[in-house]
Length: 250
Image (cartoon, rainbow, N blue to C red; front, side, top):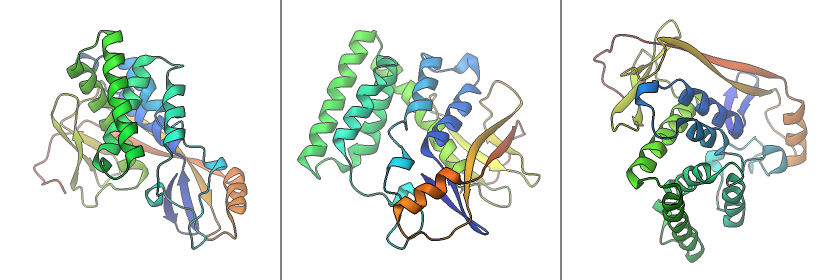
């Protein structure tokens, strides 16, 4: 889960909610420049964090505070395989995108464990087989995954409250077209992406947030109970097309 401090506690965004926000961003992309198999790719974006079930997991830090996902350590490859197997219920394309996502997250750790290396090799084999079965070129699959990664990164910027102050720009990442994209928040609270890559000139996206008014918890069971009972609200962002500025990205 994504945990941000609030004035009287914590604001918590579940990973599946973050994935849904990422899918909202993908759905706004300009149609004429859309990556291959757009709707299936958006489905993959929406479900790429289905493995996360915060109410069933250990989410309490050593000091009794809700634990942000960046603090998690270790990888359960059995669960990851189960997650990818579950993606096949939606289709090989969704499984392919999810497998490529695991490759991206894990390749930097290659060589650290035999189990991890075996998992990564397995994903490369799966990806090659699914591309062949689907009749999709590797370049097209990579373009679609770049789109998925771009949406995921943009959603994380919003959910982790990373928008810079003073209308400064922040790089999102390269999009499926190889173009660099930046995000900027204006003084009136509206947000833009430069260059503009969306179908409409203005739109609104949102994510659901759970609010915890308690700073610390005695045990994980208490945290889970508080999360289930927590009041929820929507965080919204109004995106608008704007003339590009020359401000250097952070």
